[in-house]
Image 1 (cartoon, rainbow, N blue to C red):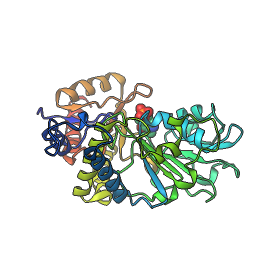
Image 2: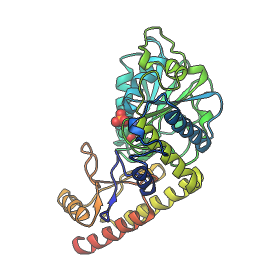
Image 3: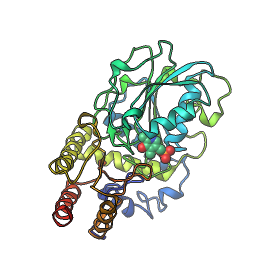
Image 4: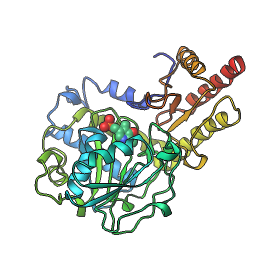
Length: 361
Ligand SMILES: *Cc1c(COP(=O)(O)O)cnc(C)c1O
């Protein structure tokens, strides 16, 4: 295998140990003589894989009994619609806190199905910070409040679950920071995440929903968009993304072997600190995000000119540091440091940055 570090924001790198295990089991899962890809989703073999993954996730996140875990398709983007469709009627207010482009997309989609309102936004600050909860104009009768705990493009992360009135279900799009540290699921009504950043391959979407929110509040929700129907059929209303589900299960198993989410939190904190320190110790690199709101998962930074950024990316790639280009909507550099990124990858990046500056600065 080529000696590279892949900083892609998503689909992102998976742990090498997981990839090797998937390779070893690829043609013959557990002596069945067939690949996981080739077996019925309703057979005993896949049922055991599916249940193991679900149970390991419950253990990792400490998910309480009154929540259902769904393994769906359609990405986080379909959850922009499903959250609104299941939780709000057309005339119901639903509150959105927008701290970046994913939050903007979520509220734009919800407007098709309910009275979605932006109750706080950091757009005036170019999404470089999080507005304090005390300034959120929360609707007392909101069907739910939606926020984006980690904005993958802007590199802005909530480091605490916002305190909102208990009667309003809190909805979080955890696509890019789920499983990166322990979290208290009981604070949420609904949590969702596309798999391809910190869970597994693309094609799988994880949804964790509290029992009292399972039944849609409106009666015209298509079956495939209905949380209750998915829960009642154990996410097998139709053929689920079996291989992605299996791979996610391997990742959960790997996380347990690493010491669970507390160990991941420490690992991720260490990596992010190392990179932010390298950025902050020189004026050659600049991170535009407010210190307290910086993401541990997606570290964004700029160089003094677009030409230098272009040159940085070309040289980084030649040095085996891949996919560091910032999102096309914002430019600059972005290093994604999900669970699977080893400390060695960050050390290699930091030493490349120091060398680049010494030559070009
Ligand atoms: C990537 C991402 C999405 C979109 O995910 P899809 O699975 O492609 O629909 C939504 N929200 C956040 C925070 C993301 O990082």
